[in-house]
Image (tube, rainbow, N blue to C red):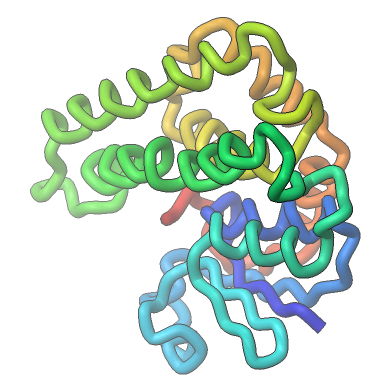
Length: 218
């Protein structure tokens, strides 16, 4: 049984979305935020104290885009989420899969940190403003890619969309969705209606402990 350690709408939501899209059985361990502070025992499972942690037999992974790639490659290579290596858009698919984390989510972590997570006296509005502009400028590539399609690759919803759309979920939690360009905004609306997205949202809500904090954590 695959086990996913997860906080509400954290990066680990990518993994939960993929599990639901692949219709894989899994155990969901909802963690309070931040788990390294609120649940010290978790450090025995993941010494970094970060989310996600996916355990699949002897395999243990902590990178959300890598976990999505692993799940699709191992359990769904023939699913609609995957592209075969000889597909003409395979390179684009891999690029978007990691673009969602490295290029779109990273700058938002600094916005989150310096507007919400740090104590008041350590918050840095100028840093948050700079990285907000960074994030929004990176959306230009997504806007351009969607000029002739509804999804990023192969004319269908794939794992690449899970990675990129999560970054838009985080942006919404940071009140940045009002600045999305038109095609990105429409894309985000479509992503929120994707069936596995809705199932993943219901799953985390169903498993959410009453004492666990709900936060767009990293």
